Structure formats: C-alpha cells, structure tokens
Image (cartoon, rainbow, N blue to C red; front, side, top):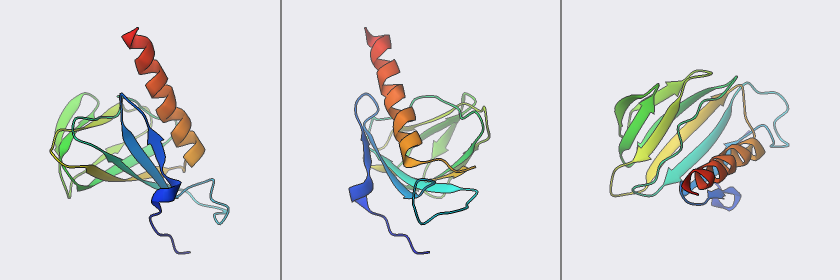
Amino acid sequence: MYYKYDPEKSIHIPAPFNRTITPMFMGDDDKITETNFSVHFTEWEPGCEIDSHSHDSAMEAMYCISGSGIAEVNNEAHEFVPGSMIVAPPGIQHKIKNTGTETLRVFCIFSPPTTGADLRKRALGAVAEAGKKEE
C-alpha cells in the first residue's frame, strides 16, 4: 500500500490546544484489513500544547520532525527537538508543548491502532474538559 500526507483529511482541534491532526494510516481506512499499528501526523503552532493524558491500552511513540518544544513523560520534562522521540506505554501520562518559534511537527504511531474518529473524540473531549476548568 502507498500513503501520502493529505491535509484535506486533517482534524482541526480548537483552543486551547490549537493543533492539527492528520490521519495517515489509520484503523478506519477501508484499505486496511489487519494491522497492529496506526500512524498520524500532528502539528501545532508556537505556544500551543496537548493536554497531559494517557491511553488505557495503547502505546504511543512520538517522533519530532521539525520545530522544538518540551515533552513530558510521567511528569519528567525532556527537550523535544528534531531527531528526538518519546514513547508512552499504556497508562503513562504524556504531553508536548511547542516552546519554539515555528510549527512543531510530530510523527505519531499507535499500537494497537487507533482511528481518526477516536483521535478526534479524545482531542475534542480534552478541549471540552479544559473549557469546564476555565468556568
């Protein structure tokens, strides 16, 4: 199978997280019948971050392609720059913040796989939860 980045498939997550998730090889792709991983691409602008979260039954690996930031795994901070990667096994808290001056671009792999619908649901749930905390 051949896949190419397609920004038309992007999922836009609003404030306070302001990021774009682009599914590339996901469980909801009708070309995929059996797989033990999924791939997506995430981008966010300077100052933006993802919420601290974990996944109950999935491992997520996140590889920095460009930009710079801080990645936290179990509340331990690490410089997140091109060529670096963090891995969060099931149940491990993790988050990434863009502390640089350019778009932070990250290649992400889930095992077992997730779907674009599941990514959207989790990300929008985090936005809703953040909104409740501000009230």
